[in-house]
Length: 128
Image (cartoon, rainbow, N blue to C red; front, side, top):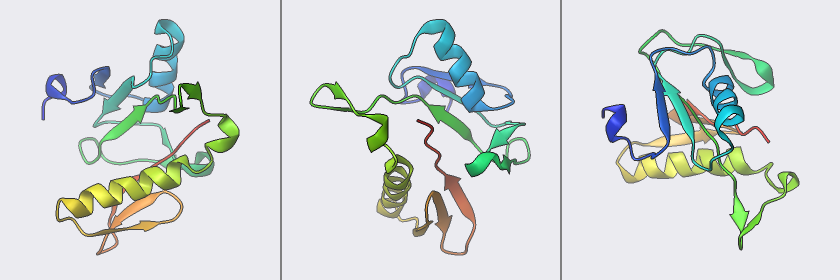
């Protein structure tokens, strides 16, 4: 799918990036915090995983995507103290959607979605 046809209305596609999360935060600082704003690239050069571990992949071998979300409940922003579950729920949701499309997966807690042969399909990080 071409980035212009993406179902995310506020998606910025970058040819390369140090970190999509850093790029997203910089854009939010300049343009304001918009729910659903996203930055993606197939060439992330300074990605970080849990506990600031280095996360890397060869250019074109992975999709790096950061999305800004403001969860609400009844129109009231959810307290950051209640968001510790977010990466767990998101990982489970990704695995469920892949399974619905015939891709068998399992979640390696707390945040990785793996193919049944053990290959990592994605990792989900939530920064509060």
